[in-house]
Length: 365
Ligand SMILES: Cc1cc2nc3c(=O)[nH]c(=O)nc-3n(C[C@H](O)[C@H](O)[C@H](O)COP(=O)(O)OP(=O)(O)OC[C@H]3O[C@@H](n4cnc5c(N)ncnc54)[C@H](O)[C@@H]3O)c2cc1C
Image (cartoon, rainbow, N blue to C red; front, side, top):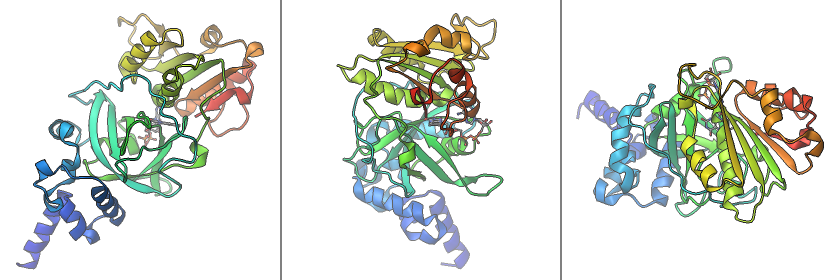
C-alpha cells in the first residue's frame, strides 16, 4: 500500500479511537490513555454481543454497557461539541440515600494521576452532564470516604498563564454502592476550561483522576446534633455526599438544614432529588432555596437574593448554643469569601465569623 494511503488508513482508525487503533497507533496517541484503556478492557468483559466478540472490532463507545448503549450513542450526538444549552435531557434519579461508607485511605485512587475512561454521558439539565467513569476493577467501588472529593485533570485544556494542565476538584454523586465505576455531576460553563472539555469528551477517552489526603474534608459520623449546609450552585455535590450518609443511616438523628443558592430556578442542581429526600425525611432534612437572578416576573414563590446575614440568622443556630452544631460551606470562591473567608484559610472570617462562629465549627469543602 502506498505510504500516504497507509497513513490515511491509520489516521482514520485513530479518529475512531477504536481498541485496535489504540494498541497499534500507540505512537500517535497519548500513551497513558492507551494503557488505561487497555487495562480497563482487560479488567472488564466487553459487550461482545454488540461488538462481534473480539476486542479488535470494538470501539470504546461500545464498551458502554448494553442497557444504555443505544441511548448513549444518540445523546452523544447532542453533546459531542459541548455546546449549550443541552437538549434531550434525562432525569437523574439516584434513588434513596445510601450510606455505603468507607474510612479515609481506602480510595482506589491515590496521589498518582490515573487515566480512567468515560463510559457514559447524559445531559441532566440545560448545562449539566452526568458522567460515568470506569474503574480498572469491575468489582471494586471507588472507596471514597465521606466527605471527600477527587481531582480531575485533562490533557487538552491548559492554564493560560502557566501552560500547565487544568486541575479541578469534583465530588462524585455516586456512592460506594456502585461497583466498577463512579459518577460526576458536572455543570458546564460556556468559558469553562475543564467542564467544556468533559462535555465534549468522546466516550471511551480518558480523564486523569487522583485523590489526596487533603481532599478529605471531614469524616462521617460528623458528631453533630445539627448541621447547616450552605451551598452555592455546584457546591451542592459535597452536600449530597454527606446527605447519603446522614439520611441513609437509620439511627442517625442529626437534623440538617441545606440553604442552597442558585442564579435561576433552572440552575438548581439535583432539585428533584432534594425534593424527594425532603419529603421522605421531613423530620431530618429541610431545604431552603434562594435565587439571585430569577426574573422578577417568574412564578418563583421562594426566597430571592444572596445568602446574607438576615437569612443566616433565620436558619442558623445561635453561636452561643452551637456546641454540637456544624456548618458546611461549598461554592464558588466568592461564596467562601463572603461566608467564611477564602477556601484555603485556616482561620474563619466573613459573615460566619461576624456572627460569632468558630473555625472548628465550619467545614469548607
Ligand atoms: C470541593 C469542590 C467540589 C466540587 N465539586 C463539583 C462537582 O461535583 N461538580 C461541578 O460541576 N463542579 C464542582 N466543583 C467546581 C469545579 O471544581 C470547577 O470549579 C468547575 O467545574 C469549573 O471549572 P472549569 O475549568 O470548567 O471553569 P473555569 O475555567 O475555572 O471557569 C469558567 C467560568 O466559570 C466560573 N466558575 C468556575 N467555577 C465556578 C463555580 N464553582 N461556581 C460558579 N461559577 C464558577 C468562573 O468564574 C468562570 O467565569 C467543585 C468545587 C469544589 C471546591
